[in-house]
Length: 114
Length: 110
Image 1 (cartoon, one colour):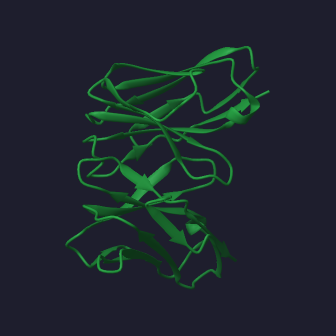
Image 2: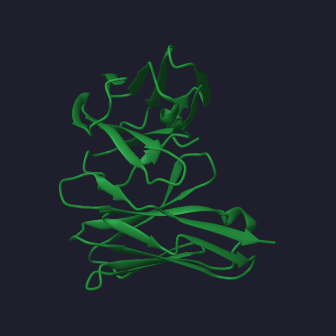
């Protein structure tokens, strides 16, 4: 375990479902991130939270809704997803928002939208 | 376009051989980091080299950085089957998040 825990590991959902991905870190890091990784595409940064404040939102569709209730927890709420949203969703945390010391990643949630 | 670009995109070598991957980037950096990702898992931080460093070692890993050429290389010596993974370089730019490249897929043949 890296210190960043993501649940669930696998998720299959229909296009009309609502589900949430959870990320938890107890490393004392101040920044947390959601990334999307699709097959044969580079990592796509979705959201950045620094000290519980969303500081970046990279043109992500509104069907993805992040939530950061405290510095240790990050959620990604999903609703009315499309099949092209099927991907590996990775959470990461870092000591500083600048990522100067590197990121610690969770193991990811493999999402399949049917 | 990507800040960091790895080369080659894919590499297959025999177990025991050395594997070399390269990364080129465009802007000035604070540091450059290499990550490994096993299939379907998260990325694991391997090594970080600062802009004022030229070479760094960690076990079987050797990283070089040439800021004049804006390039870095990752050498894995005496490769093992467990080294089969994707390897990403990531650049840390002043006051900003790190930017990942597209990765090199390394396959170690038995």
